[in-house]
Length: 90
Image (cartoon, rainbow, N blue to C red; front, side, top):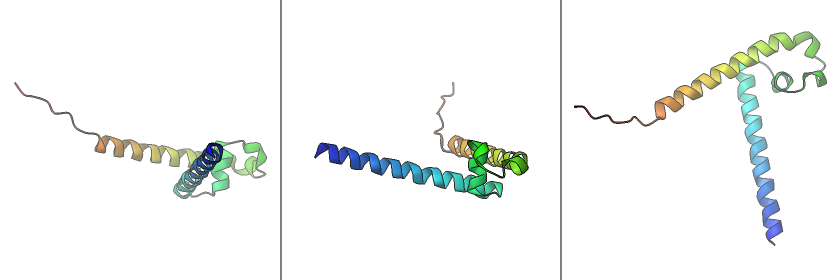
């Protein structure tokens, strides 16, 4: 019984992780104006994609710029949400 619960828990976690990855890839693709396949080509093993020889350089620049924009937005959100430390005046 415990093994079955553990297996179901792991299955649920893995599907959640996969869904999160798909959402992140789609977000990057939308921001860069490319397809999810193009994002996978840039971030993964590019040689398995036939179009890599003709379009990799263009797609790489767009995907990396989109990732940089998203990272900057997340940093700004974290800084905005960070609690401010109260200081005492003398």
